[in-house]
Image 1 (cartoon, rainbow, N blue to C red):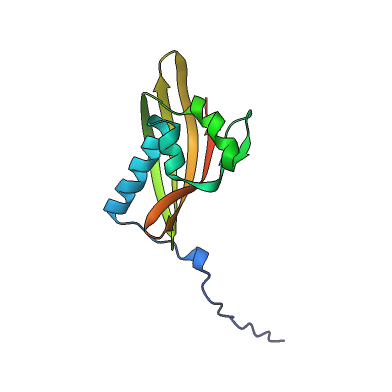
Image 2 (cartoon, rainbow, N blue to C red; image 1 turned 60 degrees about the horizontal axis):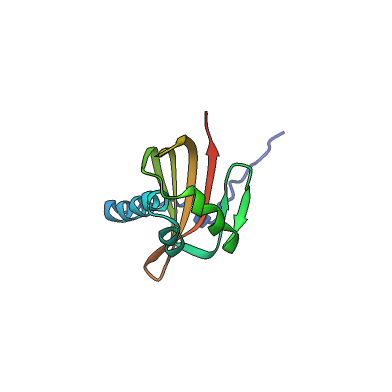
Length: 137
């Protein structure tokens, strides 16, 4: 008995077509991400979409829109941050930054986490639409 198998060609889904950012675009996004940590709530709000979603270690957990800002008042303004294991993925107008962070501020233990931020390029302006942190020991 002979069985014939046909290979079906499917259209490539856009999500499978990862792209890259120019070094200049990457620099802009990494600078935005560093300032997200070090420059305070006003800067974070200016570079974040209105209805963004952020996931922080519990508590507070999952926050969206205006829920984010009271929490970030306590979680920004770090004196220094080091972002290691940096990766950038792009698909059309979306870029995802992933990294390991070590952040310092006076009178607070060094904070270490695995992070991911997603940015949307909206009319040539990058805005953060999500941010997630997973603490590491």
